[in-house]
Image (spheres, rainbow, N blue to C red):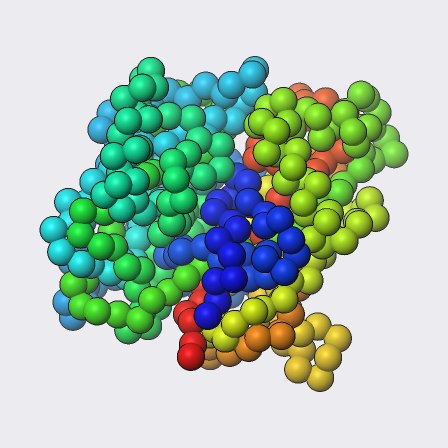
Length: 388
């Protein structure tokens, strides 16, 4: 068992459990839209302006696999609420599954990559799909606002894309379960800080009707407590004001997120580097990892049982590049057992704010965990499978 609690669903907001014990493995269902490279970034780039790119050429289909391409029904022009530049929008897409299938790969294609920050795909069972359609029908325009998750029920994450990610093909014995009648919610985080426009993104699914071993994706978060530099000043350099600003832009849950991270990970001393130790409550096998931060990210590391004779480094990105958030495949799967500890550590650099044109126009702030591109995150994404 690797699912002590369904506590995290997304990049935008990690839904923390009410207790540290329940947080434990922070398990989600599934991301598979990531690159196959296992090589860490060798230089730091913080442009955050990856631009439109052609869909990478697909690897050949393996035995029993087929492709299914899906897109938004029509183009959407994002506009952030409350004067913000971040718009999380959800759209229903239908893979038209009439029988059980498994997702073995996915390639998201942002049609307007200049405004697409990331995308997440959530699986809906038929009942959830009805609720999602009702929400869609009652919301003006295409789709609905969904800061963080799908905005409906307890939908499972089944794929994602962030800059630098391409399709990842893991062992063909593993996949993500899609029951007949499933729908997908395509949640796209748009950021209009640099430019505006419309978008009609799509995704190419790699499916099989074979029965496979299930994969899950765990998110392991750590807090962000990054003060303004000594050269900066302003109202938002006060932590309390900065937290209230995050809540104003993204809702009360955003403020609760910051509070819960402090409770689960322990009080954090303000500074560039933060970490969190999270216990594993069931046996699992780790196949691949990735790290997620925003434009102020410098480095991210995920370790197993640090400070013990069993210590292993599972992911080490010493020069984080926002435009290269590729999944790192482990050369050999690593087994976790109950009682193990996973530590995620991130370093952010407030000094980058003065160097990045898209952030220079914004007032300096004390940076905490937040859904916006000008806020920050610290996430280790771990693709794993349960073991007996």
